[in-house]
Image (cartoon, rainbow, N blue to C red; front, side, top):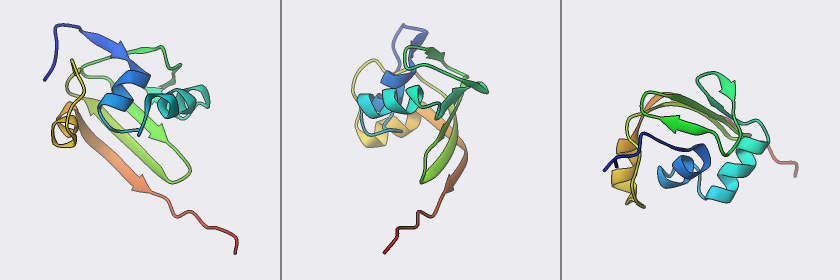
Amino acid sequence: MTNSFSDMRIDIFLDKSRLIKSRSIAKTACDNGAVKVNGRIVKASSKIKVGDIIEIESVSFYKRIEVLGIPMKNLKKQEAVLLYKVLDENKKEVFKDG
C-alpha cells in the first residue's frame, strides 16, 4: 500500500486517502487555512510523512488524523482508510435559511 517515497504533497494525500473529494478541493482548503499539519497551517505543496498529524476543519466537520502510510497509487475506499488513523472527529450542524 505504501511506496518507497517517504513523503507526499498534502493536497495529493488528502485526495488519495479520500479525506477530501478531490485534489482541487484539497488545494482550496489549504489555501483557505483549513488544513494544519503538526499544528501549523500549510500550503497545498507542503509535504507530509508517516507519523504526521493532519487537522482538517470545514464548515461541516473537523477531523484530526495520524498518517499511517503514503499511497503509491489510487486506492479503493476500503484501502484508503488504512492510510490514516482518526484521532478526533466532529460533525457540525449546518443551518440553512429557509
